[in-house]
Length: 144
Image (cartoon, rainbow, N blue to C red; front, side, top):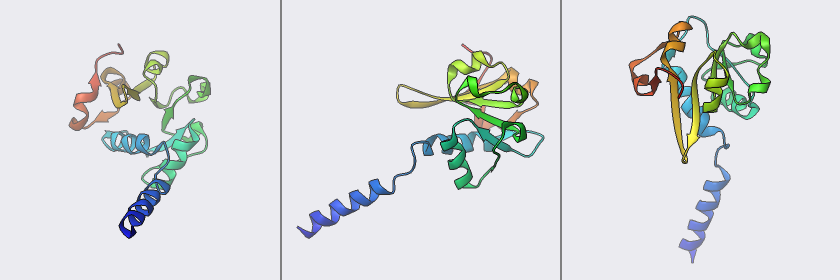
């Protein structure tokens, strides 16, 4: 009985300490960003406030409250991209946005329950972004 109670409490604690739903996205985003090199300090803004908060909690990258102050924008909703920020480095969270936003250089999206990463090689070259060789498997020549 004590063993069953201990097991039950352990499972309860495990679920109680489960991270936010955006945690996995942020971990992947941080890994991708760590493999990219831009000529400026990386300052991130996102229209998804949960992602922005999670990035801030991890404290690996500086986050900003306005897209105008960002060097990289993580975008989930095209309608939230204001014209003043459309010239920034944009990483999207929806594959369709790669077509809709020509300035975007990469995407993280879920397909069949798995994360997918796509980085458009001509776009990173045009934006003077360098990708480490560890990202070669994610490089594409164009948006399909």
